[in-house]
Image (tube, rainbow, N blue to C red; front, side):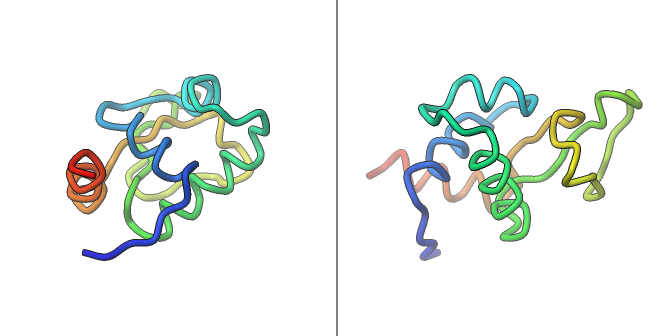
Length: 92
């Protein structure tokens, strides 16, 4: 599985072994701009590497549906493809 990932993407992936909120992700990455983090999360969702987990505001599972304008309302986690990528990243 060859996937070109930038340093921010790798950092986000490494944080999502367990479910994390958007705010936790932005506070833990070494990136000052939360908009760049949000864009990276959206890209990783589009690549099926991570998925939205829970709509925190509504208190229920979000499945694959989320409002990309309200990232703070969701938590995220790795997909099976994301877990495979994480294993590869850890071996590097």
